[in-house]
Amino acid sequence: MAQIVIAGVGNELLSDDGVGIHAIRELQKNPIPGVAAVEIGTAILHGLHFLESAKRVLVIDAAMGGQPPGTIYQFDPAQKGEVKSLTSIHAMGLHEAMRFLQPANTLPCVTVVGVEPKSIEYSMNLSVPVQRALPQVVSLVRELVLGWVRAEIPCASESAARL
Picture (tube, rainbow, N blue to C red):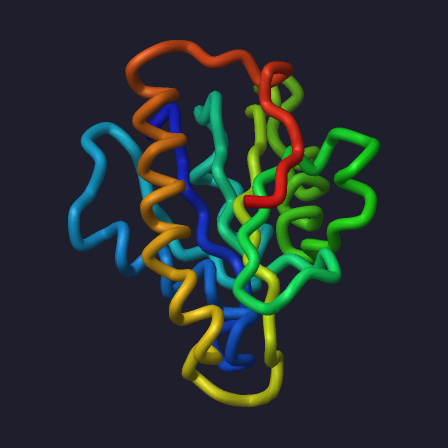
């Protein structure tokens, strides 16, 4: 299994909640060598096998931080401070679910790239602001992951940010 995993989480049937799935599909069109880009959706426990050997996990999800729809956030769900004002239910669920990994496994560092949703109503389409943000999300994810591939970036050096 890959040491770096990009996990798209969310429900693609609920408009912007599916931004993680849409982003993964874009990333899969031009894969990053040695990096697994996987659709986890809402079946968090079913995705754990992708994380067993991962050292780094980047989660893409809808995140509510009170900013305009389409705002992109980057944060570590285990950090306190600024992050407490951000809500990413699936990423937090994934972070918590990793406790089910074998005790011998070291938990991977988790970074979340979240997008402020406009709508979580039934629809398979992203809202206009989130659709416009999607290329930036994909670009940011590529930039972060390629940085991890090229050099070991310690988890502690990452901080919460609104992009």
